[in-house]
Image (cartoon, rainbow, N blue to C red; front, side, top):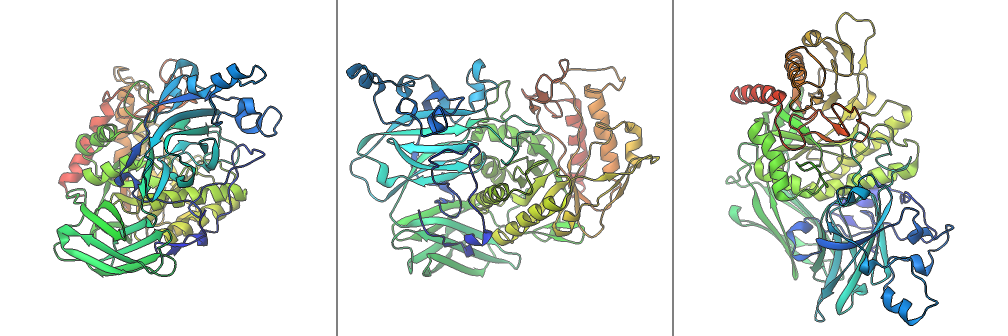
Length: 631
């Protein structure tokens, strides 16, 4: 473990995060990995390494005996899934020996991928699953070796060669461990316990409106670096037109070390030395040759930072995003966000939350090329870094969110610490992504004093970690009773500290309003900030038609709902974007209408297998007209 340090010009300790507790406490709790004490390995996907994707042995542990034993004490030897032992040999040599597992001969599953799609028996399993595999490392090796996880849902404990490494809480952000001293020449064993069970104090809590895909859902890699390496780097265009770099080195030679930034295509070089904490910050005027990133010209530049034997690499776009009055300005010019919301679920009948580059391009291609969109809301949690990289390449602005969803434990300090760490992990991972324009701190959270304090803390964290992007949250509105037409008022006090006001509205779907009345809706919202509709939508089962009768769940009803809601949107003078709910039908266990849902939320404009519904064309034509009008 390292001491708390200054990273990228920011004292991470300023977040003031207490150490969150595991969802299930164990007698011998492994150290918790956070942004304060764990390696960041920012842009780790650009580093060379060994991909551990592929077959892993697995064993379910529904009573968590491998963590807490039979009676809550330390696990008995016969339950220690992480033990570095040949079970068959040990039991054959001594008939007094008992093991009630044998990871080396257990079934295998392909990782990454949720266990829900693994076998029919695992479809609704929530709890602890152990994974194990072996890998080889060369005898002649230098520097440091990290075990890096793209994400695992929800609480993860890690062991290497039977030795405890650490744990992590949170299902959607990366984490890494320095395992240099635990490796041995030749074959090594890694064991992972992943517990998907949510509790009253987790983020998110147990009740949501999406599938809780338990397991290792993003790649695991072994990454090697020199003894001193670039752990964190952030290269950006500031709003005053300057290219600024912040970097943090970690290792024995981190202090007073020579560093150099290079952007070859711009013939730009900056050199300097780190301070006593291993930090370096430099700035210079952006060269005239710089092509700013935008949805129309998603230009990316190869960027390197060299420090001693290490070279950090990334592909970075340069642009500015800000607000002025009710306008959102991209590179100083007003932009209308023509978007859609997306869950992290690949197209297909049996998704496992495996987002490959091809899967990301299939989803985002529907937005960019099919809907004529320039914006995507990645809901309701940080999506795979594959998605944000593809958004960079394709030219889509991104709303990125943490799963502070509905009713979290607002007054619990552990829950707040967990949320703050998730937010920091998300921002530190994606600060170099030009596509990310908005950090969202919450979705549909009823107003209370405790909630206001909680969310204002997160907003303050965003502003300390990233002063180049916008902050928002998806808010609820008050609806007038007995009004002649739908009348809504945004009275959420959180709006005062947000850059962009965002509203979820489902008038005409979850209410008894006639669709014909929606265009005449009355909205009372502050006039001095941009407004976006973060959600609106209606369910339709692909292929179900009602012949124009206006039946809910029909494609015709959904299409008409979009026509009337878009007409209503046109009446709001401060509306600067929207991300209707949602691109694709997605799994949701709470949705159990046997005729239309069967465990799927059907608000997608395409079905789970990619079939377009009528409303897809309604939104596409609306966005195409805005695009042609220069909005």
